[in-house]
Length: 80
Image (cartoon, rainbow, N blue to C red; front, side, top):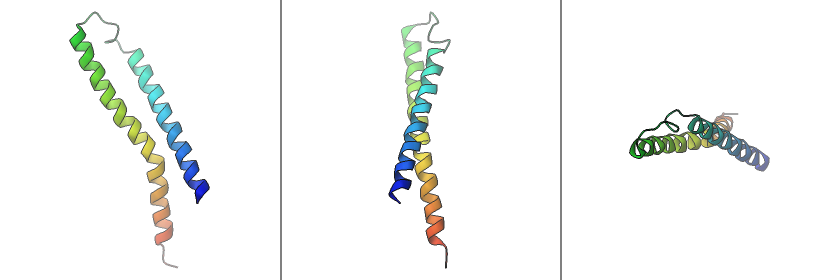
């Protein structure tokens, strides 16, 4: 059981890192970042990007743990 938890942790960590990497690439290549718009417009864009990124990273990080917990609950809930 301990090895399963460690594996879920590393899978979760890897998924969160990959999502952060993708989010940073999306921000870097965003046309709004390099446009000559006002600072207020760019600030709103960055705030929305940060919020979406935080939610996406949390969702990607919890998915492996949730998947394993549901599988364990099904396995342990079976009648013998």
